[in-house]
Length: 199
Image 1: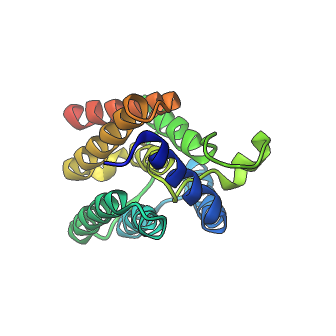
Image 2: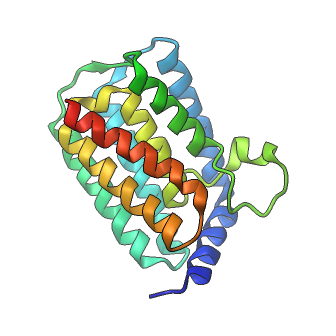
């Protein structure tokens, strides 16, 4: 198994080599979340399919950055999300404001500005090019955030999958890599797990 230093170097490589892709994900996700918060509804299958592609993006970047484990894991996550999407009905989904929605918005913002791994100094760079869509933790934070904002898509399978992946990568990031800000991802995954049991 690679050492923590090797893993961290690989994540930094992905975050800085594929900045253009991260910027694209920032633009797309910001537009969608702003519209959702303003009351716009979207086709449930379209949003969930977009989130599956969001996860697949991490898997592809991982392979290109010589990290086959993350490549396999996120290909699996994307595949599961895609299977769930195929079973969803063609119906509109939108934000239902409650405490889980607020936590979801916070999780999305955390992933959106995830302050780690970029070579460039200054918080302004994280506003548009944090490694969301490139590496696991910020991507899963945003994924869990949007899932909470949309009521878990009324799918227990979707929610438990997101919670499991979030807990695994959050705990691994904190305990194995020493990236302590991933405690936020652990907290978000636990909230999603709580929402799973509540539903």
